Image 1: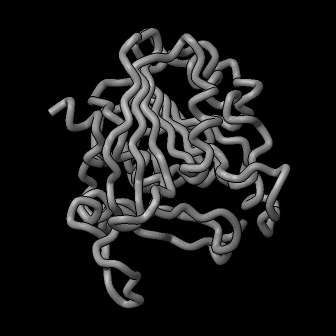
Image 2: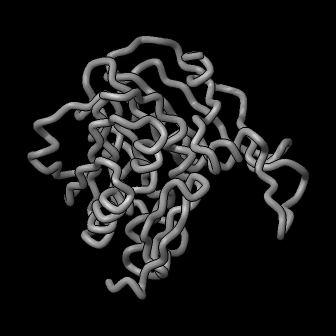
Length: 257
């Protein structure tokens, strides 16, 4: 793919610039929210499953810094873009091309303090496939969520943390995928506006933990009761996440103080 077929998009108020295909899957706010929910600290080993062009991982590295960061990506185009984006932003990230269901040996030999993932949202036993093979691979589920959770759990160190973002209507599937190896589960709903149902959820789980399940109060993305075409309607907290690289005020971030 030539540069003429790519766009160079700014994230975190321009602190991060990412090449993405002009046509195909393009990252929006979801990977930024995912990165902002991860409680990693400098020196932690972090793996992103299905890293795409690297937006979530690079947002996390930009915010925290000093991470031993790796990404696994199935599609060669996106794996190449993720590595290019890391290099051009001068952020350390090792991108590995491969399949979650057949983990490359270089990753199977490692364990991580944190694993994050933004699995495909849409079941392909219903609905309409996305236009374009790269976009469909990114959005249409071919591996069940249980396979993503299993792969992540295997790569976590004891007490390591899994953080995932998913559509709210997939929450039952996500929770049922968490077997006895994971505990201390917490879910953070994300609603578009006050009084509206949550459309996304973040889930945090810890390997080998036994804490109780917690369902936190929703985080609201937008102020007002409707979308303003020419206005930035994000709440101040969400604007801080998207523009300034601040952590997302999830229930588990609040617990850490």
